[in-house]
Amino acid sequence: MLGYNFQLALRSIKQRSYLTILMVLAIGIGIGLLITVQTMAYHNQKMPLAHKANDIYFIQADNRDLGADPIVRQPYMIYLTHRDATNLIQGNSPASAHTTVWKSDIILNSFSQEVRPFRSATTVTNSSFFSMFDVPFLYGAPWDKDSDTNAAPVIILTKESNELLFGGENSVGKQLRINEHTVTVVGVLDNWDLKRRFYDESYSTSRKDTAFIPDSFAVKNNIMRNERIYCLPQDRNKRGFWRTNDIQGLINSECSFVRLWAQIDDESKASDYEQYLTDYVNSQKELGRFPREMNNYVTSLFTMVTLANELRSGNDPLSFIAPLFFAVCLLNAIGILLAKFMRKTGEVSLRRALGANKLTLMNQYLLEVILIGVMGGIVGCIFAYLGLQGMMRVNVYQSDYSVTIENLRHAFALDLWMVGKAFAIAVVSTIIVGLYPIWRIVNVAPASQLKSQ
Image 1 (cartoon, one colour):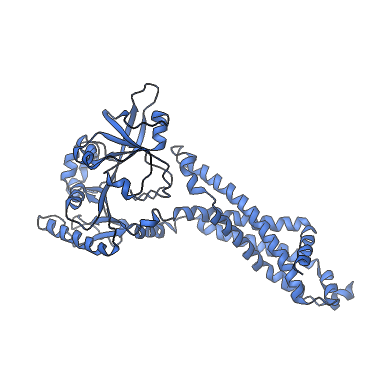
Image 2: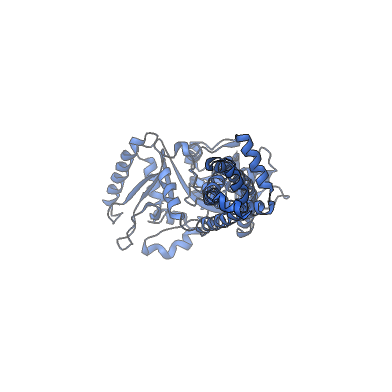
């Protein structure tokens, strides 16, 4: 019976094919826009380092002045001063590892006259960064802890920057210049499947760092700070000067610009770290620092990304437009399907007069609707792929071509999960919109139709 109904469904689809094409296009276009938007949101909301997102914590404490506005949510809290981050790392904490992160903007210059210098978005950190965040290496390895202590002139390049500077070959041991300082390459990163750059709280999907250098080296050589710097009122007019000059003045001030991450392998020890942070802040209060009431945050990576997704969820107008557009497409599909089915009232009436019951007819037309939904899903996936390619190029254009398609491709990929979702939505929605036309046609009174014939 299923095979017979399938043949009837195919024959019906071929009849008045222009109506079938219109319906498939209506569903496909709606699915295409919906899946395009949902795919971008799906990649943006993916949890980075999902396997250890509850073992990595972001550390914050409020050292602002008494007149500052209250902060009640973690994403709005300031970072730490360099002094506080260093003290917490050197103290007897429950964490198995710490790493600091702050951003710089430097010029990378090869000793080869054939390679042009270029500006590099650089992360200033320590050796624990690479193991804590599971950073893959193509060549070499992270610098060691002695390099952190001794302010060693070393650098780690990404695969892209290594291509620009050394043609992609193994550059470990080779030298280049950071501004006027000579540094040695100790490692080159492999492709890092990091969906969003969480470690600097930018959550960027495109602008990748191109180099990593030790914090101690950056401090010793006054490497520029490309950071959001929060200072107490008496020091705010010095932020511009401290951004490029007198790093020791910045470090000795109450200005916050350093992100501190801690790895706590046992989730139960997170409360111990909170107490450790509280004890530290209390000890600093005795020295006249941290004038405000206690306001510390020890936030897991999982919680941070979840909060960031919540804050960004309502900012994309396409997330509202796409479902509405899809609903309009479905309404059009109802009209088209109703017009297609109501032309068959004579055929349905004849079959019912010959003994076909309503359930048999419903099964036939439901199978036809499912086939239309599958075709709509195929067309929708094609439109979604084209839409994602278009949005990817729009993002490249908006960045003034400072990012490449390769940098963005992972954030606009139509994977099997989203393809399956497209087909599921297409079939289910087509069944739903087809119920009314099917109900109308199987409930037509046969006598009235046969008499008119």
